Amino acid sequence: MTCYRSINHRVDANSLRLYRWYYSRLWQWGLGLTIAVVLMLAFIERPSSFSYTSDPRFRPPPWEPPCGLTEGIEIVCLIIFAIDLTTKSYLIGWDEFRKCKWLIVYILAVSASVIDWTLTLSMFCDQNLRVRRLIRPFFLLQNSSLMKKTLKCIKRTLPEIASVILLLALHLCLFTMIGMLLFAKGEVRSHNGEWETYFRDLPTSLSSLLVLLTTANNPDVMIPAYSLNRGYSIFFILFSGFGTYFLMNLLTAIIYNQFRGYLLMSVQASILRRRLGVRAAFEVMSCQGLQCKSLEHVDKHLNITPFECACFPVSLQQLSDGFIQWEAFRSLFDELDKDRIKVHPPKPEYNSPLLQRLQLVFSHYYVMIVGNAVALANVMCICTILVLDSEKSIAERDDYYMEVINCFFILYYLMEMSLKILAFGWRGYLSYRNNIFDGLLTVCLLLLQITIFATYRLPFPKWLVSSLWSYFSLNKYIL
Image (cartoon, rainbow, N blue to C red; front, side, top):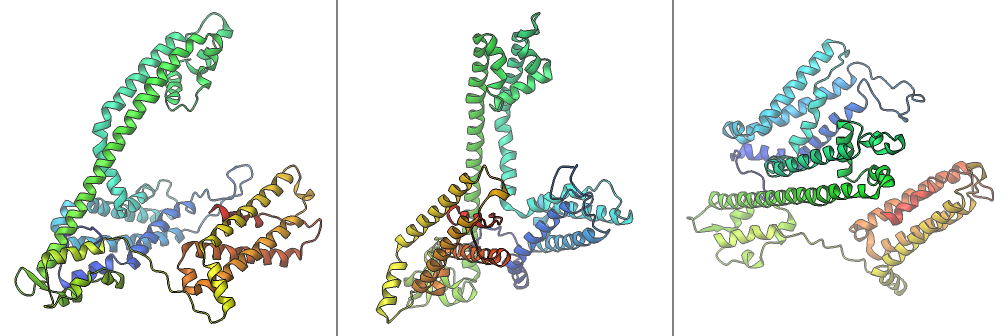
């Protein structure tokens, strides 16, 4: 209910269990993984273009999967889509199913994919045209409510922007004809630069001004004419001023206004569905009449997390009669919509004065600032060495100083991570996302450095090693 989904579904006990399973994280993540797999099949299916280089002169023959390998993976994905379709259709019922165009198209997409898959196997994977490849993006579209809303918004926006698009087309055609008259072919060949390059015929003139409308070929398109006579710049100034800086901005404003209005309507519809669901839950869980409900009854039937339990007003939990009125019941669900405030675990307690002092210092906010400054210094050192070695070949470079600098910063990152763990404790350290990122990056840098030492031994002057792994420390500051 609090996820703002449609309330038009079955409400019996078995259907509700199936409904919760369907919208569980396990199934939704599995469905998303299935969509990703079926979309990535295009990289390895025949004919495959998956190779380390795009140059056909150096590209070896691509790997051809045996017949039935990708088809076997695809049929598993299609079976999962069929289960998803069947479950969703059952939950909403026949009446709602007939109204849902997405599910009807979903059936057609799965059916067409199965038919095309059957034809592929019957032809021993020698099918040149595979229609189901064109259908696969629909599975991603159907599973994303945001993409559905975007398509609906585009559908509602098209009539509004049609007049501006028509005006843009007329503007483009008018200036195309004027340009062909201005830059017609003359008798002097040296004066025909504009005509030869941009206004030779109608398609060339139209495409030149269409690109100029986006300012992609500005000022190249006007240079030949401007070199001949500065007065020709008036034509391009008028075209760009009215088309690019007025009509294009007007088009952007209309699209933005329509999308904002549709977003507002979508949010209002979601809130209305939620309020209807809350009212329906209040009436269903009625114990004594229509005005008061048992709080214990509410706690028993609500599927809420411990955090949401803690969000309940204390006054509601301490009612003397154990019953709750409608207004209080509604305010209870309003508490669930508030943003979650993450509470970090308490810091460990130490008896040693030295550990207490270290904990106080390395749990302070300024430690993060110092760490960012050190990471910035690491980036500056790497950039300096890159600039100094930019003119040298790989054989001429000396990676000794680079590795010494990397070892110094890695040791600092390890010390910083260890002292933060000491100050916050394991749970407290992992409760901060930036600490998780820094810790993982530090461990990766340490492993990469150990690998380099194991492969090339300890650094020494004139030490040659590929420094690409060392540049990985750039992410410590950039990200």
